[in-house]
Length: 319
Image (cartoon, rainbow, N blue to C red; front, side, top):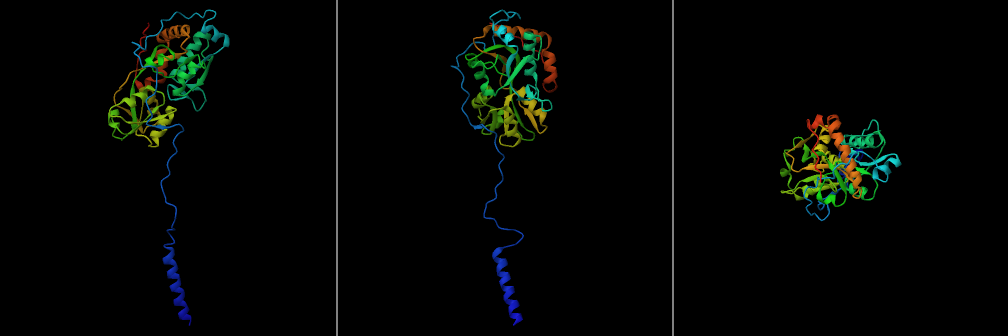
């Protein structure tokens, strides 16, 4: 009788094990899929080219109003700024070496930040009498039109379209668009990236150049350039394409990425100024004349020479 019971128990146990499967490999009714890293807010896939003005040719968009000295007569835009007690400058806070926030101090630093301080030095005799207002790339023109800032010192390329919406100083820096990729990717230029996802900031000439490229990559537009670096590091995109100055700052922060290819655009940077403030344009150009003669190379050497080699300030063009 006991032998029969043992046989019955063994049979039941075997059936139970067969029904449940290997106890070391539990079955799950939920399919297992790799977790996707979250995308930054505001990412747009394959957006249209940024809209400008009418697109009419303005001959030389970099030609600015000739400087008229550093005086600040009563009733002028500069006198109003001096009465307020501070210059308000729109800047970037996400582009290493050009306009970024030092994580150890919380202070804004970079080439553009120092240029803004030179304007405050000229107005007040104090480079610290400047209030920085951080904006996104696509909001630069809007901030000028709304009078939120006195000047926009934010690596802004002068174009005919933008000159219909804002005034610009003479060129204070000359950059060119290139491509940033992961090392070992095999990509050597923009032409290798046809049909591949390439990141650029919204509202930028860089994005417009990507949309117009042949072969055409798949543009991925973001609110801030720092998001492009994140997308590249997380392999959401194959490359980032914008000004070489910006890409150099990204590459200096991450040894796994590199800038490749020749420049395929000319990006003359100008200081943006509200369109009606022509006296401020002339004043800023006077400040830039002094900067070119006395401090431009020091500022460039502090921030950009270690990654872009030596350079001279661009010569101004006046109307």
